Amino acid sequence: MAEATDAPLLSTPLANRHRALGARMVPFAGYDMPVQYPTGIMTEHNWTRAHAGLFDVSHMGQAFLVPADGKHETAAAALEALCPADILNLKPYQQRYSQLLNDEGGILDDFMATRAGSDRTGSLYVVVNAGCKEADYAHLQAKLPSNVKLERADHYALVALQGPEANAVIAAHVPDIDSLAFMTYRIVTIGGVAVHISRSGYTGEDGFEISVRVDKVGDLWDLLLKDARVKPIGLGARDSLRLEAGLCLYGHDIDVTTSPVEGALVWSMQKRRREGGGFPGADRIQRELRDKPKRTRVGFSFEGRAPAREGAEVRVNGRAVGVVTSGGFGPTVNAPVAMGYVETAFATPGAAVEIIVRDRPLAAKIAAMPFAPHRYKR
Amino acid sequence: MTTKFTKDHEYVRVEGDVAVVGITDYAQQQLGDVVFVELPAVGKQVAAGAEAAVVESVKAASEVYAPISGEVVEVNSALESAPGTVNEDPAGKGWFLKLKIKDKAEIDKLMSEADYADFLKTLG
Image 1 (tube, chains in turn green, brown):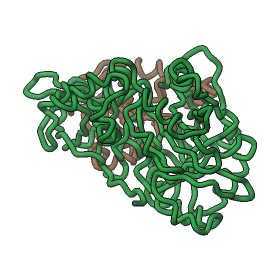
Image 2 (tube, rainbow over the protein chains, first blue to last red):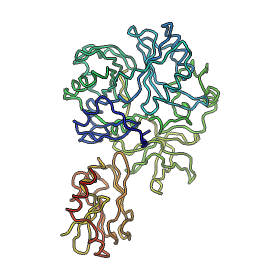
Image 3 (cartoon, rainbow over the protein chains, first blue to last red):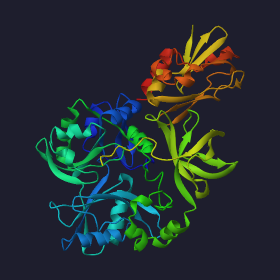
């Protein structure tokens, strides 16, 4: 998703702050983004696992699906026609992870959907990946029924505060934040600014994603960074954190060719949808649920210290059986970590494989994920 | 004692008939946290410009090219358990390998410290 193009790079409203903090900026998904701050990826990664890391994720797409009749059932039915999650039974203020599917059951993007509460009754709030957002919006515009309108929320920025001290940091501004349950949101005031705060994130840690008006995000960013428990974290550590947490990066670990079953995302398809179908590619997905898919996303652990990167071939007895889709060094597990696909017959945790790095086979094993235990607030 | 530099950000420090090869401070900063170093076998013959070692940061793998031709006479095996030494002391304890110098003329072709400093300025 970070391929170079001739198009000018977009900036988030926090770009000048990243530069002032000494960030190294790189092109990512069409945006000029901080990959790391001066202390480096390893320090940022470890800080997030021990304290609270502040991420600018304003490049991601925020939008609302607004039903003409103001009824949740109307918006939910429209979104359920495009994804395999149970949207209908979301409670007000509750959110869920899902995937937009093409007609073959391949994943166009993964996203978060939230049922609005009394602040926007009937609407669904969705957050999509930066690199996919224009295509997602075009897809939604084309597929949504006429009684559900897509409303972009480009005037909102998004930051994430992640780590074991995130709750205490927010509690300094929102005393009852501890009662906010995992995968739910609330409208609160931080530093005099109304924000949409959800208990969610993409690092495996407890934490929050905070949606705030573009003209107020700088103040919020500065306020949170005044807390000694908070440090800014770049995309480099975001990637190593999510990899250790076993979470997919769109365009790498999942794409238009992979189904949610192959992607080991069956947990995100609730029983009513798995059994009832009614989403794009349901024939393929239900067949894969019944007969197992040909390939499955798995984790890999290594005996040595050499990391395997995206694209490395996975072999069993000399035969190619899969490929690494994300790989690197996991600072928390202090060892190389990777995920990728293997033929399902080989997807047994503990099974030995070889991963080819620089033409040499590295001894590896199929590993259960996450590599670093999730510490979500349950 | 002469130290010379390449455009790929390796340094070569001449110590008698042996050259110590490592990566520059600029290179380690660009790489970020080094997590793994793959070193060649002692006795291996390398040609100038050929891959001599691999350095992996959290993000990516990068080749270390031999700035000059020669036989690998020693490698810094301490880096295998402490790869972060490359970040902490690239010009000192973070060296990669020692080459028995084959052709001194190859060294003369490399950049001086002042030339390398000027070269870095062109990189912005």
